[in-house]
Length: 196
Image 1 (cartoon, helix red, strand yellow):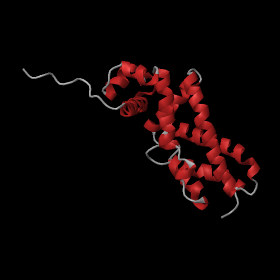
Image 2 (cartoon, rainbow, N blue to C red; image 1 turned 90 degrees about the vertical axis):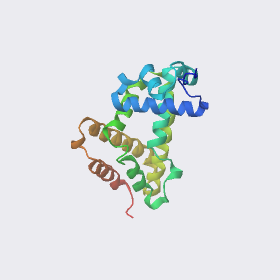
Image 3 (cartoon, rainbow, N blue to C red; image 1 turned 180 degrees about the vertical axis):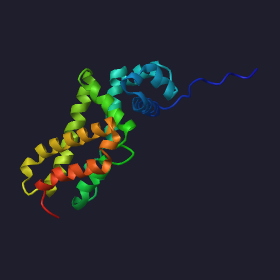
Image 4 (cartoon, rainbow, N blue to C red; image 1 turned 30 degrees about the vertical axis):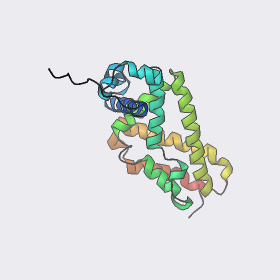
């Protein structure tokens, strides 16, 4: 008599973690926080429920790891951007790229942002990622600003603008297309930058 097929496939720990994070992001994209459940994520990843606790210490740890992964996918690093002359354009292109500036992708951000205040692990991860983001954007602004002392403040305001435009696109995509959102960011920064 043949052996029954194994229900789960054994994968290396890093691959299993990546599968769980990918499943969590997919669930959030489809259904927000209500879809971020042990059953939905473990089923989508094809793993047993206990592996979420094993790899992340629980759902809060998975939330934090998912947030870090979303940042890694969407927010470029300073090293990944081209030389100074076009770094700002490259950043704007990345932030408003069609694969990330769409309702399902933005739904992931909204889900995570909504959980930050009530999840200490996520709060810690947010502070780490956000501080890196501000530093990177401030560096790009400082390269082009006649007075770079205001670069950190401009960076914070710029990020808030990007987040607000993204929120509006998520709520009502036709009211805030990517091109209009990108131009709003250019219009905000232009008075503070030296002409090219």
